[in-house]
Length: 418
Image 1 (tube, rainbow, N blue to C red):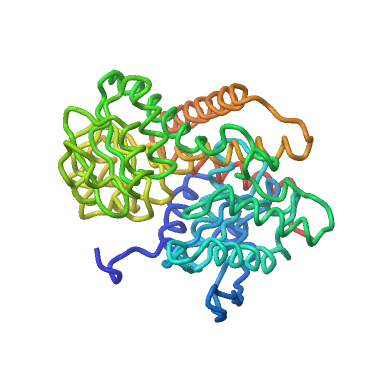
Image 2: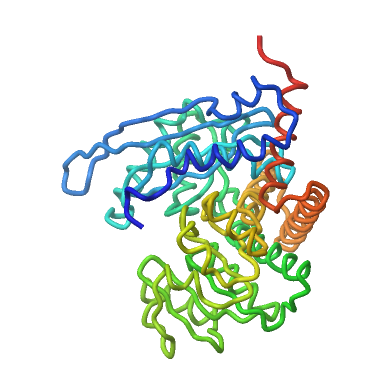
């Protein structure tokens, strides 16, 4: 798909909202509120590079809504980050938090950069300066960032340290996804992938498809996709294809997800894994399987390829991987889609657990974290499923109806200030 053909994610997010809002008794003014971000910040900041030169980067932080509580959302580093993308991701975070019952609103941040081209010191300089620029919005009771595409626990630690230096004391609850040594939660790194696994298994059970032997295809074998693959393999599923930004591999009789993960850590990619056929990212989406996990970027399943998807279940590990037009096609074809705002909510759920632990300075075991996460994911899945059946809609529409209704009720109870 060319750049000109790619759907605008902000248009896509608002279209999804408008479709669902038709099912909710919304005040027109509240509906208009929810179609817009609450606030957005664009920053242009200098970073000193290793060669002594100064380069100016562009960054964003957007708050979509804070009716339910502090805004929560990740920070991504990517050369294609745009303000519209960040707006869409912030709106999706509002619905994601509301869908799984968290006391958060939605936010998102991003820096236009290619972190693979930066040294570790340049990456730290960029992170600390960006954190300084958005610290006017950050606060442990106001806006709590987290990792997203191309950011990790170390970057979160730099953000926490930078914010703490400004305040004059350590403030671990200002950011989640940190290393355990500085207030991070056990189980956080695997949380999003674990949530994808839990909801994919529940979807298979709804369709009476045995988990054992179910073929799994993963687009985006990173932190989310790889963890989901390993965990699905552990419960008996068969991972037959995976990919990353460089390409994919396919073995119909099954790949060893652990071995592929080791190969990627060693070589930087899944490509050239022994005894596997090469496959492109687009062709991979159309392979025969029971579970397809798009865990890369937005707009991967479109009106062009949706008629050729062969999966029985699409478990959205990425944010916004399916366009509204493709959604209609998948629904007409009877493909069960676990929507992103439900499927990949494991990360923000454990981020919530981390925030609670940091505020209390009282930490839980990894077993407790995983049990609480799995229970909340299953409960949220079946709440959305019941609503889908009651309303006669698909899972995405049901998740949106639940989320929008919850946020709208909070707005109505709080009132419009002043």
